[in-house]
Image (cartoon, rainbow, N blue to C red):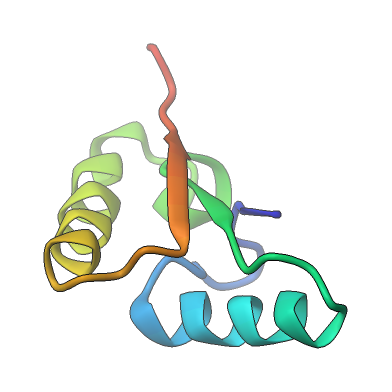
Length: 74
């Protein structure tokens, strides 16, 4: 599963928890990727660093369900 955002960003800890719970309910390993771009940065590439800071803090706090990230190159 890739959290890309939508009408609202979905990279925060609550969104990771909600998505992970849904994945686990389906009987799958709760592992997901967070897209720093698209809806999560509200399509403003400079905001990718805010998403990065949040995801890095979650991982530093012990979050193990985030297995990767997607970052726009331009």
